[in-house]
Image 1 (tube, helix red, strand yellow):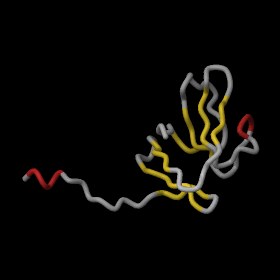
Image 2 (image 1 turned 30 degrees about the vertical axis):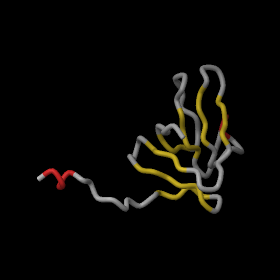
Image 3 (image 1 turned 60 degrees about the vertical axis):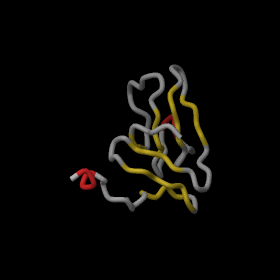
Length: 88
């Protein structure tokens, strides 16, 4: 999956073509009834992608990965530490 810009419940006021979001648990306005969906703006309309069990998405806003499991997006806890120390 391509990354999302942020997780939010309502669409931004002035989206740009290609903007992609993860809809929160309380979708509203044009996103009403689409909670937990991934959505992107095609330049005219919002296109919705239904979440599937096991799906993973990266959120640019908080630099975290999220996994869809049991009807909920869960932040993935980092398992690997940065590898910068290996170069010293």
